[in-house]
Length: 125
Image (tube, rainbow, N blue to C red; front, top):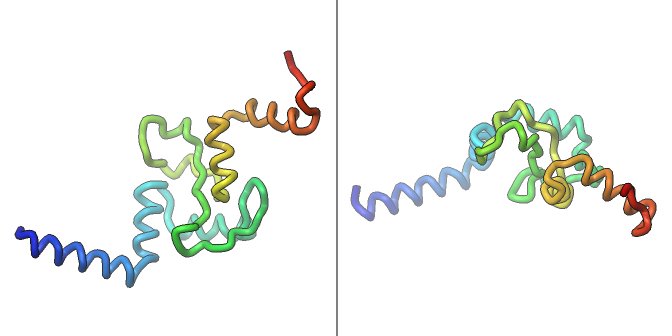
């Protein structure tokens, strides 16, 4: 294949993705997260279009600022993809980072909660 043919294919693919963003999203859901658009849409409705943790409504669910798809990272260790069985819910970017920074460890999050409530003098030691 010549460079011109490769460039033409890239332009055609980009134009297709622009015309059919929902198909691209469906492909991403299935290949990266192991779920389909129906599961994603059902979860959005079940969560009342809001983050599962902070309950702040999602302002945009149709482009690059879509809700983050949360899953149990212990399920699919060593891969950059989720199997779909460990799908937990939809989160805003801040809450998704919160879980990531806490290494999905409930104990760290419980300790952070106690610290927020009781201040720096609180200790379980």
